Amino acid sequence: MDLPDIVSATLGLSPPWHVSSVTLADDGKRLDIIVCYDANHHAVCPHCGARGAGCEADSEIWYHRDFFRYATYLHTRVPRIICCGLVHTVERPWARTGSKFVKISNEQNP
Ligand SMILES: [Zn+2]
Image 1 (tube, protein in one colour):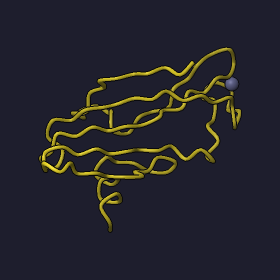
Image 2 (cartoon, protein in one colour):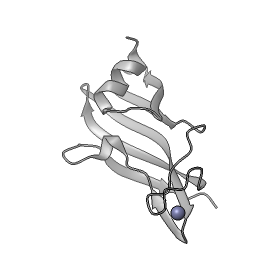
Image 3 (cartoon, helix red, strand yellow):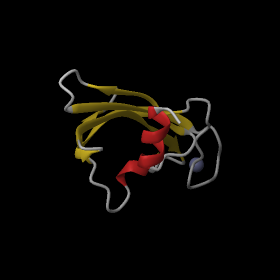
Image 4 (tube, helix red, strand yellow):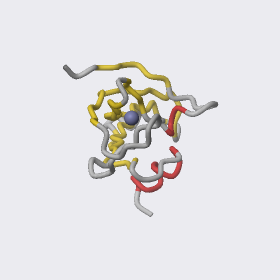
């Protein structure tokens, strides 16, 4: 197992989510993780079940002050499924109940 796989398992990720990179800062105190949602995976509308529903993505940054003993920033783009006249977001595995990750930034793309 390489480091992205270990981090992915610790975050509880499963496809289409995966860790694309893990970077430890030069000072050895900060970890940056980039989590990707496989663009080829067609999101399913939870309302009508349509596959490949219109999809946009929001950039988010999540913070954990003690992940593997590092201050950790998780960078990701979370898809938004636009269907049935509604906007649905997909579940973020690292934000499940009991997780210590907190969202610190939410950048909506125009
Ligand atoms: Zn729908």
